Image (tube, rainbow, N blue to C red; front, side):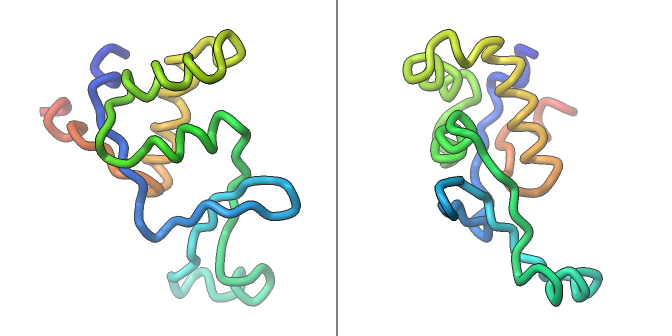
Length: 112
């Protein structure tokens, strides 16, 4: 886990955060040919709903802060309600990375 704390997440520029009917969503463009039917049924974007902490973390994924620094900001804002902080934060960040919603600076260097 300690190695993950040094990673620097940066939002994918093609992903938009939008408030819809009181809830926050990441809007992911559907661009592949395989998404054709889904676009016909659901529009041009897939949506992922974020809770309040997720919205806050997304805003901090600007390529200038490590996961550890983001965690400290989350702790300042949300206190004990964010616990277990780093386990949740790392899981969330890695899920965003797996879905190509963020880039992770330092990832390739650690895997060598």
